[in-house]
Length: 287
Image 1: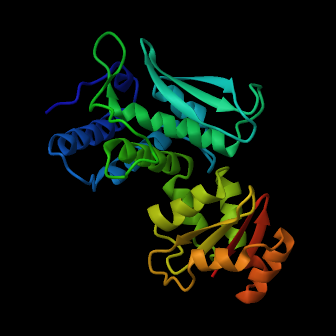
Image 2: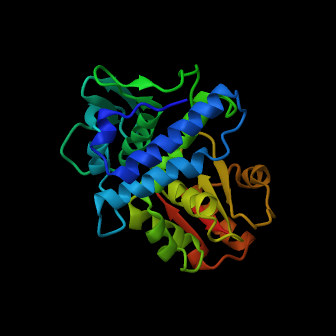
């Protein structure tokens, strides 16, 4: 079982090539073994991100995702989409890859947090391809039907999840996450961390709590106020003990106005001001 060294790989530092090849060998082995779980895949793909960050030689926490795309021979094409939405797709080409990214307006405006994450996510898909001496990159394993919302036991769902994991590690490098998580866990610091790395609050929460296993005893909730129906999403630290059902909280908050919801939550759980924050159409709080 081999991984073909690619023209793209030859333009990368040797360590980056080796980490990509390690990941591809593992994925190939798991695919051929019909493994229901790829237990080591997330660590391997996040290691690729760390090596790419080193190759970019950035001097601060905000990674230039366009630079990472160039390292991987990913050209970017932006198309107009419904405002507030960002999605993308990766297409193999004779020159490497084309990432087609939807954004609210095709301008020279700086990339927003969703667009940055989408580009990083699409770069993650390139590790599921190899490229021979000529022609377009080819899949190392067949692409199964379905996508991110399909069962996570399907390879397509696992691939999407791994590309999210790669994007988190690329946009929030470990050495800066480690420095940030020495701060006291709070809703204020959660949102400050997202701003620090220029990512969404949800992405930062997942990076700290799930990838990095920081703030291990904390429980954060996001209450979404947009749309016709309020929704509640929990984010649990590794050693936290859930004391609140998101379904129960959703039932308690049903019918309340947004301003009343923030006051209700603060009073209901006796929260400090730094442990409940509203940003846009969401309320974040920590127990």
